[in-house]
Image (cartoon, rainbow over all chains, first blue to last red):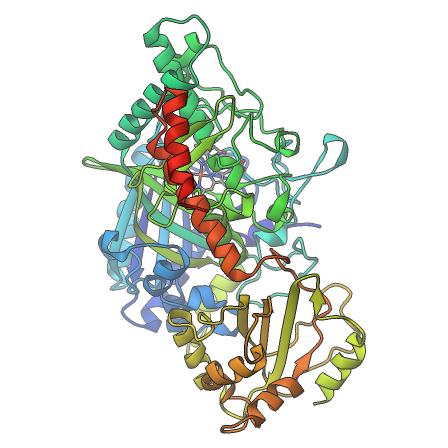
Amino acid sequence: MVLELADIQGNILRGYSFPRAIHLFVAFPDADAGRRLLRALVPQVQTAARWDERPETALNVALTYAGLRLLGADDECLPGALREPIAQRAPTRLGDDLRTWRGELGRGKAHALVLLAGDGWAFAQRLRTLRTLLDEHGVEVGFEQRTEALADQREHFGFADGFGQPAVEGTDHRRAGQGEPEEYGSWRDIKAGEFVHGYEDEDAQTETAPLLRNGSFMVYRKLEQDVERFRSYLDREADHYCATVGVNHGTDPDTAHAYARELVAAKLIGRWRDGVAVELAPERDPAEAHALRHESVGEPDNDFRYADDRDGRRCPVGAHVRRANPRDSARATAQTRRHRIIRRGMPYEEGDARGLVFICFNASFERQFETVQRLWCDDGNAFGLGRDQDVLFASGAGSGKLTIPGEPPHFARAERGLVTTRGCEYLLMPGLRALRALAEGGER
Amino acid sequence: MKLLDTLRQLTRGAGNQRWGAHSLLILAPIGDGAREDLLGELARCEHDSPLAGLAEVHFARWVVIDQLKTGFADAPKRPSRLDRPYLLFSADYTPAPGDGTLLERLAEVGAAVWNHCDGFPPDGPARVDYLAAHRCDTTLYYAGYPDATPARVKTAVARRDALTRFVLDHRDERDAATLQRAYLKEAARWF
Ligand code: HEM
């Protein structure tokens, strides 16, 4: 199976790892202006084709349903999830409270999203050129978002992030532990059709429409993180942990507390802050606790499974990464391979507000992203955890507790408001041919 | 009707019951031009489901089937096409003691939905006959709790929530005897 890399947009199958990006949600004044702009942008779009020398900046384009309609796309092939206005869908399907949304993001006005990534002078220069181009076409920027990578691949809660990704068939940058677990410790790549339309997926389906071929559905969520609240939450849980479970290393109280903090954080997320998987290292040296927050291990080991850890004594069953990718855990998740997502999020900072622009790519919003968010993160039933929720997404619908199994177990309180959704958009990031067809379409 | 006959033939002999778990599947053709209205009615049901009051039902749903899926691996060489959209209803349930059958209750509470189906009688017991006539064997279905009634499941969930609250409220209690007394007092309310 050969992927048509030159027809697939960049950053889907392989992350750019640029330190900076800007996301411009734009509205076309009318269809013709939209097409003219697309014609100008298409030759600039960064594809997934291998580069000899890394470009200094990269530009990509995605379209909302409103944009696709305006451009006269044949929309028969588009799923309900994309058609439905996101402000209507998010409350029922994603549990969002629209009162927490801010600005124009997700308000139905945007037709397209132009993404520019890069750094330094080249980035600033290209952004200026891009803005001029938008102006010339009478295209208005309704919402814009800047993102900036933190040192050591961290997100704002202090965890190294971004390396837990599916290994995709036909790409050459996969690592053990990222695909589908098979016998004798081996891993099989996930079929490309789970992420890019027009290739075989895990259900052996390849059928697609020209509009979707080599395209991918994109989830865009602005998630604000309350860093202060997370910090004090961990402090309280560490107090409790020290008093009940205890840190039995003959360590002095300060070190014990610092370690308990790191341990609780790691058990709830499923990775230590430096990225090491809790499943592989359920304990660390308490003296290391402080260092975990600053040291980087580059590419942490991903080669682990959960089947031998049914009760979650090593990595709790309800830990964020174990929910989001249960690998070979039993129960309702036997079909993990049909619910994988490629994450391309990046941190942002706006004054006091910090957070993650969560971006993910999948072939089906419902089966992949929404299933992971709703059934696996926002509820525990699929894992035999009742109403326990992911530590990051605690809400009124949850049990209010999280369990760290052990002797004795630690029952953590769930803290609401750690992560708040500020807006959401569903888009299609089309293949190059489809983008060109849209740019030419209906032209007289 | 040909589709229903074929289905019946294919599934003849297969049961709609495994242990205490019963299954109900009804497949009815949607009336000409009624599809959009039906979707509107179903959207209303999402907020205020007429099925919510059926004590014996664990899980139930209506699904509009526009067309059969074709083009998948091992699909039949000559794919069947539906000549019209169908409304599928499926439920798993534990029969409740007392008067009437589930079909009777469904014909009443679900009338606003099945009204959009071809030939659904305007009123009367004929509606129950209609649903019975459009029933198919299920053959393969899933029941989370084959031996428990929905009421028992709900009670169990409520107790689990109460236990969770108890655990959180008492997680700082270090004295075993005090904790035990509190637990016995709390648990006495559950049984
Ligand atoms: C502010 C919100 C979030 C934070 C702070 C966060 C944090 C993390 C961290 C620290 C990791 C481990 C690093 C890695 O595997 O790359 C991770 C992994 C992951 N997260 Fe999140 N996450 C957030 C939101 C989400 C959301 C909304 C989803 C999807 C619904 C999600 C799905 C995943 C998945 C699939 C993995 C990889 C698991 C694996 O393959 O083992 N995350 N996240």
